[in-house]
Length: 273
Image (cartoon, rainbow, N blue to C red; front, side, top):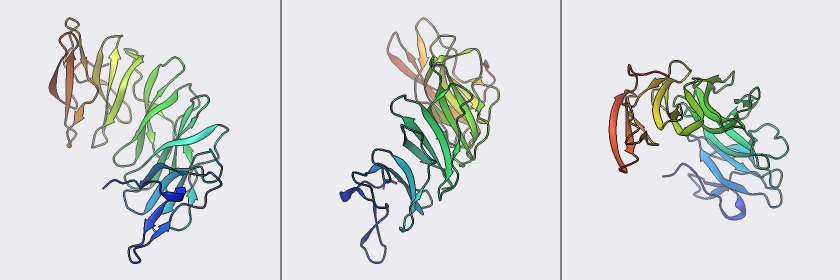
């Protein structure tokens, strides 16, 4: 059963009472033309629903939280600057925090915030002290940290990590050997929350696979050495074992269009970046 509920007739959310077997409305009254969007999720502890809607102002999407049993609806986001809307969010596994992303549809600028799920002061997680613009983001499995991928105006990229409650983001991929303008596709957090694995082009070459501690540290190359003839690359989606000890990844031979699987320890003694 999916952990999201759909927008229903009259563009309001409803929940089914366990005893009366009748639905009751969860979302607050909408302004004219206001819509509760498809972005709605039940918290892991089954106590609250988080959703986005232009509930208070038409065409300005904001973030709201309400008990699954109904009651007072709480707006979670801080005041949005002109042109910004809430575009995405994640709920921490302990159901204590919501991490949400805002976007200016005109400029494309994005920011990342965390806020208690029952309401409170929202804290900006990405910093304005650099020119990086937020892209992808993930919460660690224990709900304690956030890792996000960000780009600057020239498409240089880096992974940043910090506590979900805020602080100074740490660049966990600072190496000069990595060509950040060719940062490749995606990253993953190990189940034990100790490491981040990611793919990146090194010195303009083909994508390779790396591992780094989630709070920053030595970056380790995980894949076997690649050949240039035939041209090889590590493909997009590695897999991490449930005990976080092993990574399974694929290498594609670009010349022969063949792909093979490999297994490697999460932490290896190999070329470091």
